[in-house]
Image (cartoon, rainbow, N blue to C red; front, side, top):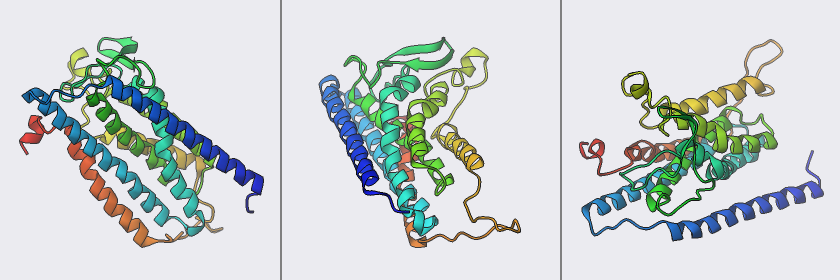
Length: 302
């Protein structure tokens, strides 16, 4: 049944309000970043190395964010035509929803105690739950607030890169639950994954929490090690996708009365293949830029 005009107007107003709010947030925060983020001193070898690393991570972040277009094409192409608009719209909106959650509190939970000499920034906060090698959650001023000593250009580049990884976690379930979940449920997932789900396990691992510190606390080798997100990104996204698929069950019409599966043919194979090519291209930013530096030995030795 087509939507009534009042409902369509309501959806348009909600979308416009959301876009305005996010745009205002990004613009105003961008002004603050410009005031608080001194550029590296490129007159020194160390400063030039940091500036080069920042550029490298930023390029990697752009490539990974571009992968979202690939996800959108793959998922939409493999779904039925009647649901194409819904599927592609979830892939379009998930980045903005997750970004808001990660910007407001997610980064604070995940990386409040993390700093990088390669990118020239110190840890902006401290542990929130736990202490020492047994930290379970970090905290720093929300919405990337804080002093200019912590929030430098390097941290902004790192934040953008981690946002791109968060987007991958968020969009994996959009494929497993495509054609089957309501828009309101999707919006809740988008905010939740950016604010809580991705940052929680990320704080234990990439953020330097208890799993990453097992080598120090119980002499367990190097502790948890994950170079480019096989666990923090893909396993976390896959677990959420599996849980959602189990709860929702198969798509309507997938199984006949005899219990045998039926083919629900993709409506646009070329679209799905183009998306695959885009994902392949963006993957080079996903893995290669995970060195976080062109000056690191792990990169220079290759």
